[in-house]
Each structure stands twice: as structure tokens, then as C-alpha cells.
Amino acid sequence: MEISALKVFIAVAENASVSGAAQQLHCVQSNVTARIKKLEEELGVSLFLRKSRGMELSSQGRVLLDHAYRLLDMERQASRAVRASVEDGGTLSLGSMETAMAVRLPRLLKEFHKRQPRTQLSVCTGTTDEMIAQVLNHQLDCAIVGSAVQSDDIVQYPFFTERLVLVSATGSAPDNTLLVYRQGCAYRARAEEWLRREGRLPYKVMEFGTQEGIIGCVSAGLGITLLPEEVARNLSSDISISLVPDDIALVQTYLICNKSTIQTKPMKTLLELATHCSEVEAA
Image (cartoon, rainbow, N blue to C red):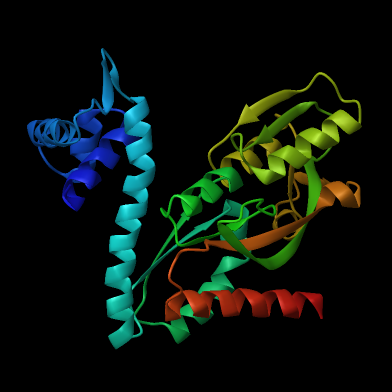
């Protein structure tokens, strides 16, 4: 079983189609189809259920996907460990909540770059649940999430405490329309709990993919949301800020990584910076 074949398999699984995998891998569809067929013949099972509109993993395919992620991560970590043994470089992939990316990360990443100028750092944003899954699957080296993780495979370091506030359009009447990220966002869960507790039922939810979209539509009076106070205080006068109870407002965020991931010098540097930020905040 070749690593290159597993990469093709993962691409098809993640895109649920041969065409999507081919586009991601920058190759022709016939090459993808041939690699999947050869892998199935080698294993003696069908890895996908062919449908009119894409590909769905079979039960055997789901088993292989978990192992494929692990094998690719082992290959990546082996290469990284060798590079890290001779230079302070290599790569580091970090996931973050969008609000943390906008407010908290710039200062930390500036200091990280000073200490690790040769490290190729990639940063992506997503919901807390998505990033936990990606760290568990070794798709991210580490991530900033908005809740503690109940998993023996995860190591977590307290990062900073966020205070959420209720944000609405200035002068607008109370609204039960909640403007939030998709399911899996830790702040969305807090907002929905607050609405239920306040008896503001029924309520509607409008999902957005970006913080800018949420803020713009709140300003237009389309609904309400919960945002970190540090973000909300920097918004325009079109926005009104209200406090919510501490058990809703106070969110402990964490920097997490997979316990089996090799902690290279760049990763150790990032963890040290996050720990320092936490200590400064607590002082």
C-alpha cells in the first residue's frame, strides 16, 4: 500500500467525488479512478459506494480512512522530525476561531515569527468542533478552541478567557433572530443557551461563514449575536452592547494538540507563547 495511493483515497473521501479529488490533486480524473481501483484490488474490498452524484465511503472505506490519516501523519512527522533535527524550520499548521484570529493571534504570531523566522506557518479558521476533529485526525498540528476537550488523545493548554457580550443594532427592538456561525461553534452554543434561559422562544437562526457577515447584518438590524467584548468594543456606533450572565459570558479558550504529535521546536515555541499569554492575563 503506497502513501501516494492513500493521499488519493483521502482526497476522494473528503470531496465525495473523483472530479473534486482530481481538482484538489491537480491531476486527471482517470488517474484518480485508476489509483482507487488498484487500491481496492490490493485490499480485496470496495472502498466506496458509487452513486449518481458522487462517492460515499463503504464501511471498509471508513475503517481505512482513519488509518490513512494516521499513516500520512506519521510520514509527515518523520519528515518534520528529520528537518527539525538540523534546522529551526519545518512547517506548522494552526487552526483558530475567527474571533481569536482577528484579536488575539496577531500579537502572538508576530512574536512567533521573531523566534521561528524559518518556519512555514499555515493558519485556518473554523468552528471549535471542526478543529477538534482535525487535530484528532492529524489534519492540524494544533488549534485554538472555545471549550475544554474530553479526549485522552488531546493535550490542552489554557490560553485566554474571553468575555462575551450581547450585540444588537443601536435603537432596534429586542429580536429573537440569532446571527451565528454554523453548528459546532462554541459561542453559538452559549448564545442559544442564553435565549432559552431568557425564555425568548421560539427563536430563529441565520448562519454565516464570516465574522464580517455577522456584524454587518447585526448592524442592519437583522438580529442579535454574542461576540467577544474585545471585538465588540471596536465596532461602529451602529452597534449596541449589553452584558449577559457570567456563566454565559466567560469562555475559557485552549490551545490543543494531539498527544501523539511530535512536538518540534516551532510547536514548543507556540505552546510557550500561549502559556505566557495565559500567565500574563491571570496576573
